Length: 407
Image (tube, rainbow, N blue to C red; front, top):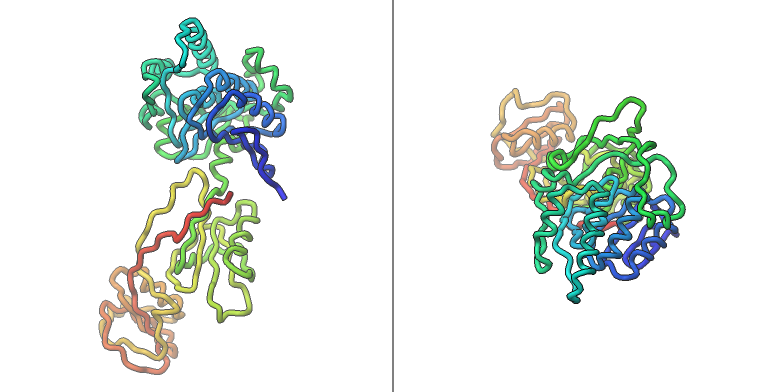
């Protein structure tokens, strides 16, 4: 079974060695640990950052390796890259801030002015090699070490901190020691990569050129990472109706969710029928998209979220629960919306959904023998009448019962 490889603050999943993650402080052993991670993951394309910073010289060595290996750097939403970590971020051949990027002056417990000046010289030299905007360096050296300047979305766009394109198709160097020589990698064999339509925030923050004929249109390392599911939002009482890829019988909702994940990204959501009375046939429905949201008290649904997706917010909608709000042999006389709102030759399902979709409809009565659907603008006094099905609309707010990380 695939596991996690760890090298100090660096780690990667054996199932996906293309992504290395930096989590935590950069200490005196971090540069060596990064070399070890690179040696163990020859396919590394992306470095994901979540660090408060740490040892400046170690961060510069790591940044030099990132630059030499032509890795992309990414700060996910909800994560931060501060202080010395910023040097590593700026080294990315492709880079993107979705979380926070913070900078300030370097600090030292000693009063050795010569060494401080040498460190600043190293920083300037390195950041210049990474095509770091002068405004970023100015902001860094103006911010006292006791403070932290976190770049706003407007500054990210104005300073072009997000950088797209120019990821090499050539094999990465197998000897990371070459990066210590300080020789910038050749750009002769680089290839521009287009990114699918970004958000308005990303448009403002990126500097992307069109792809010329003959160039690669494959996903960039950041885009590929951002599309991978990282979380699952689980809803109770919600049916994601339609867009089925497949259906099967599973022991429980966890097995249903796992079945969706096993479909290599084609399955985006699922609905599990938790009705214990159904002992045969499929109870797990795997979806190519979210489908149509529908209230159903025996349903448990899940939506897979990528790292770039925000956590879902609550939403409200009208529902007619097929398990709790449908009544056999019951008529709701009166209150009809009129002939134009009736549906001939309908099924009970079509009648129920039509009422849900009609803002004026608060209930319906379906006549089985005539296959007629009568939508109601008011709920009359229910009466027994054989061969009728009636349903009453209510409004319900849905919020995920849980948002679970997939790691």
